[in-house]
Figure 1: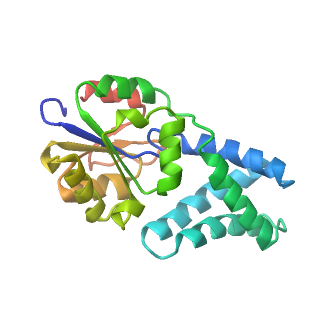
Figure 2 (figure 1 turned 90 degrees about the horizontal axis):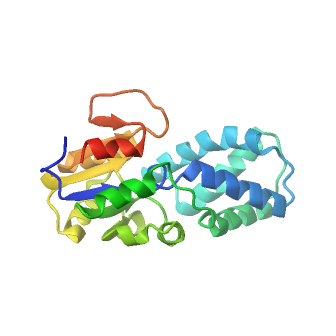
Length: 229
C-alpha cells in the first residue's frame, strides 16, 4: 500500500514498539514491594491504566503540568481504592517509578523483526510525547536506539502530539516531505489524526483493541507492516 511512496517511517514509542503496559506493571510490582505498599497489583492496575490515559490526555492538552501528571495519577487511584498513602510516599513512588521504568524493556511482539525488515529500506524515526530522559533510556536499554535517525520528543518540540508543530519539526529534522512520510502509532487522536493534518500517511497500530474506523489502515500486529511496506 505504501511501497514506492514512502521514504521515511516515523514511529510512536510507547504502546507501539515499547510495551508500556507490561513494563509499567513490572515497575509497579517492584516499587510496591520496596515501599511496602500492600495492595494487589491487578486491583491497582485496573484503576490506574484508565486513570493514566485520562491524565496523559490532560497533559497532552496542556491542562496539567508534568509534576501534576506524575502525582495525580497515583493519588487519584489510591483514593479510588480507599488505600491511605501520604503525599511523601506518593512523591517517593512517583520518583521510583520514573527511575525504574526504563529498566524493564519488553517490546511488542515482532517489534525487533519489523525494525530489521524496515531499516535497510527506509529512514526510521521516533516521535514521542514521553519525557526526554525516560524515552532515551527506553530506546537504549531495549537496544533499538540505533535503528532511528531522528528522535523527536515533546520536550524538545515544546508541544505534544497532535500539535502540528511537533510533526513539522520531525520532518525538518529528518529532511523529509510529508507526502513521502508515514506515521505509525497507537493513538488515533495524537498519532493518526495529528500526522494526517500535516500531510503524512498514517497507519494505526490498534494496541488497545479500540473500535474500527476509516481514517487509515489499521493493523493488530506489527508483522502486518511487511505487507504494506
